[in-house]
Image (tube, rainbow, N blue to C red; front, side, top):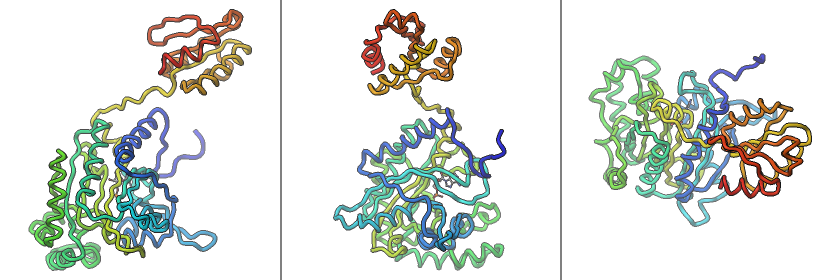
Length: 420
Ligand code: AMP
């Protein structure tokens, strides 16, 4: 072991498990790609102010968990704790919203950083795939995103997840509700910190996981009863579209989520096999965010699904993804000349699109075949001096054990046909 270890709250993705992570990212991205979402990539860090304003100064994410630092040049930056603010910033900066084709639909995949107390499913460096639909207020768009996430999870074979759905109202009805909630909360027996939260971000108190707090929250006014007509109709339409699509959801009047920017539709995907960190993904509408970061009014909706927790959810359900072997062919040479010739063949095979690897490091025949076995390749290509003198290599089918000589100049076409 080296002197160094991965920093606390982080872990390395290594083969073979890392293949599952890639497959999860792919599976989440696939339905987005085929639904009009274009790929976007933004820097791993941003001006700290973007998150302070965009995510919200009073959120845990910004106030406690952000990796913020000052550069040698005096810039105040932060490692990104989430994706939405950056993606919207990038879209605004490039004026994508002015191209006359709203909504702007984007998807992303990357690393995010939060200085959290590490535990299973909660890391300081984690991975998300996300989607944002910017610049349109349309319940069908909210429904589309939820349906695509549902499709992604199902395509992976996940079954034991639930979709929690709520509406957080808009700038009309939320302030009225906020006041009613504050009135109720001020009358409860709560600690200092929570009392402060009542004044800054009362909706977050509903999200408090402590039993004694939850017990007092019974009878708290619900946003559902305060929604304005427009929000009610919007939410009803989202619900009906989901139902028509056969996507089951649960109404959860307490769902508020940890970021300030959400309005109207809010949702979370929870998995019942994950214990405390049960949210595998979440998102919602953020109609006011663009203005909060200095842009025009651009009603938008999006989600982010956690790759790490999705992998844990797969494990919890006992689902193993059918990740195909990385290579189809594995070459084993005996002797220097054979090695050189086989290396040439391997290069040709790769150029022809046949996934090929070979034994390196002057291995013996036995060790070479062991490596071929371990690689999971269907075919082994074996050659010694005598084979080459005969102008052939031995092609071994690793599944059946059958072996046959193949003329050197027929190897590429033969293998291309067999692995097609
Ligand atoms: P959030 O922006 O907090 O709603 O996060 C969206 C998703 O990202 C969550 O549902 C998790 O799957 C994942 N996620 C958020 N924070 C972490 C973390 N610290 N470690 C692992 N996954 C996380």
